[in-house]
Image 1: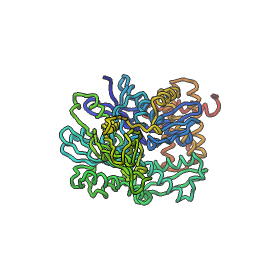
Image 2: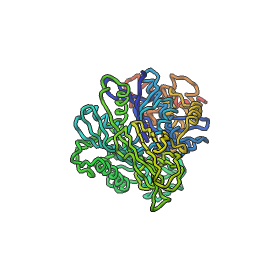
Image 3: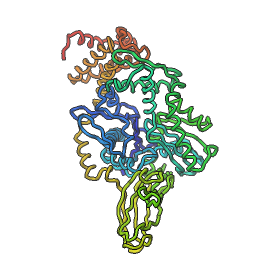
Image 4: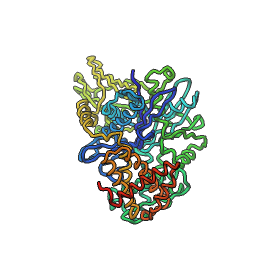
Length: 609
């Protein structure tokens, strides 16, 4: 049996892990980092960039770069990128494909199977879309695991918690999940889940950006797409800076004019109050569903990158009325937990006795006749939300009209009284003998397993006619034929070669900084980027490698200069002295000076490209 990998397919960042040396172990990407941005970008020639390089292109190529598409998994939404239409699962497949390649490079073997985490509040369509994304990426995905369940598994594995009830607050870039988990012996049992699939760290970015525009009397609609991307990026950086600083100044250069806004924790609370208030809803719902008070909760664990925000941590402390809140590896916890589950699925000796039970996040029901309002069918629930899986429930349905010759079964997912307010998963019809109303009936059984597969069995009582249906929503779901076709299309995409990523990231980063600067600094960014492009054309690896280090240091300095000084037209004549002073040994100093001399020589016209 080959290795099974665990994948945290996140809204903002994605990670891959494996069970190794008795623990869930994170796998680094080509840059030696664990976080791979969940961003995809396309060139007009069909070349696709995934991850860190794509992130750099958000400012320079906003029309053909996309992120936060995970929020729309399982919907009919499409994205037009470089003249072609893509569904969220196709874009997710490109992220999964990259993670698969990283894992294969790390493990030195082919990977064919993965366990993928999803928000607990993902509905049936979103879960199925995630499985489709796995297939498009060349992965077998038998098991989907809820993100907070994975976090609880990682926490239990690391802390060896026994007989503990844990509240897991999972706040990522695009979704919020809350789970109540019971740990005893070698069992991790999910008691209740709740969440908000439209609430995450990216919403704070947007709130900060909106406040910045209001304060500076700017209209987002009057800005170009590149300028809008710059404002959103600066908002995200401001949010991140507030993690370590009491107060920061957010600034952006638009149309060669500097705009700024002071921001501290108090102001962030004020502008993001609607988001904070939404956080309380799933927490209260989970405690209510499990019929447990906060006093009975042993530990509160915060996971997800957005939990690093002090404002979020303090709000949760205030909401729950307790200070003993753990924030443990918020970026990595879910991925580590999925790696643990991969070990369980592999039946590894050191973890095979561990058991994770999961629950149904949404109620599953059938449409029934509403005598008071015949045009508005009611929801008759067979499997309640937070029912332990696997689960099987049965109900008896009766005809409502005289001489009725058939009963239409309409399957829904959701919590609303009227079926039209819930998500329809599928439908089919059963023939029954025509008799007076109420004299014919059928038994309807729902069976829902831990992998999110719903099987519906219908049996006509009088005739014994039986039909079994695995529910599929053909309006949104991709058929096997569509999946095979999309798989062939994705294979034709020109994935940018991994070995060139370290060069491409600097090219795109320089392009972004060129868009964000003006004056002498912008000219220097442009010249150095052109010189690097010239070196890439020579295919001289020795010279490329030498100047790549030089260019990275220059771009690092430029970004630091922009943050600390904030004036894009400031002179950078002191860069050469600064850079050379950073050299360590005499040999390093001579190498850097020689490379800087080569650049100056080229800049002054002695070299041509």
